[in-house]
Length: 170
Length: 222
Length: 245
Image 1: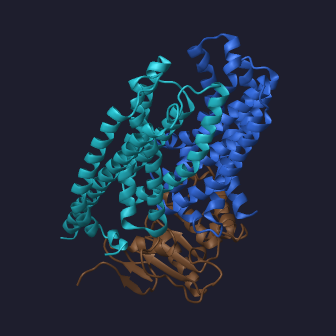
Image 2: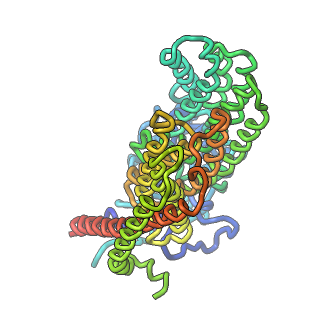
Image 3: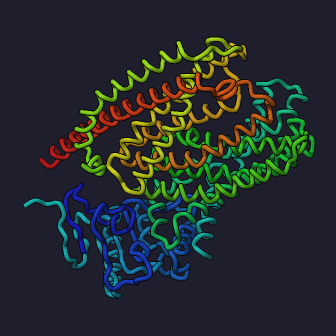
């Protein structure tokens, strides 16, 4: 589902609410068909404007930490790095990456650790055309295997999506 | 490797690689100890008498150094948001970060104590007592500091706020740490009583600290 | 009208607008009675002379210093557990008042002891505990001022207040312990030589007077804070309206 709306309409806040980073003052968020034992944030990936990367750790160390912390282990790390096009850069300190590469390393987290829900806040920013196409392919693959994506965006995502418009008056 | 040990390993790695690592705290400790004779005079008898107090004050201030970045760094690059989404309780996650801080900041201070004790003309028994009390008391300093770090996490110009919030709360630890050190040397009071109270303070703050810090983080992120 | 209606800020403003003049009058009366009793009814101390009468200001202030932190702690629980709309306001308004009473306790304690000690300050257990309490008040106030968003500041201050409430007995115990270590005899005894009726009555009246003073000032400060927040909301709405215009 694509969240569309002007700045300040609440797209980011909605994503953060589902991610468990904000607490709703009223109302309920429910998940149908997920794992009843785990909370929604534990079954979701969140990719916001920040990359959650440490410059002094290498590419592999950054991804490996999240893989271990968020569960799932480091088995899928190499494959994830290849999928985002950072295959040969495992031992490079993250400080040397460009902005686009940093964003791709951050997105590699979503591939390396399988979780059904993806919450993406303007995922195509900082990515060039080739990378955007790669991201669209990864999103298609995720949807194809039964996953769910909520993405806030200003421009086209490159895949078919239902739209949810926020904040626009008639 | 479990989630918590991954977090502990990451934080330890970061502390060692960034900004001079563990040695920065030791260097600050050394500088503070060096400043004192300039202020009170080089009389060795006097320095020996106030030595344990100087070491405790120096360690207290040095342990505050890396506290403000402890949580703020993760908040600024978005890591804290993701840490909330792991399966582990936030209380345990901040405790893991506190352990990493203690290992990389406070433990080196304890190890540096004998050298600095030499500068202050302390006898071996006094040095051992100070090192032991620091070992027992620095966990309390870290965990109390954790609360201050969590409260000031989102502030860009937090500056001196963290010490202002944390230092009054560390008064009991300081009192019993120095008292135990002095008691070991001079008597008449036993070393045991204040030392046990010091240990109790550390154990208590190992519970209160992460609990309050996690609450502060959750409330602060809304 | 139930107590819960006080939770509504508008009702609160209405109620306090009516109550405050009475409270102010009661405070003035209590002080008038108290000061009269202190001056004419309480005896001079055989050792300290008339300066012992500073005690009638010092002791109530010290009691209030602790009491206000208790009020803040209760308000903090209201903020964190029930999200009571006025809890934030109560806590924020109480902090500077508590700091002021603590400061007065320190100053009057210092003046009281000066003739006996020869200096304005000694590190005795009582004064030192109050000094640490003063620092903690200043810390809470600093936290309120440094965090921009009022509700976030309220929650942070609430946690700090509760952590402080847990720590204060520990700090008091440590400072007492430390003091006996270094100073075998305490020069300044808590209430004077003995509490006998001639001293008890004026002390209680002064304590009530100061308590009424706190309540009056606190409610007035809460009103100001509510109005301040309304102004802030209006500015925010103005900015938002301009953006979408």
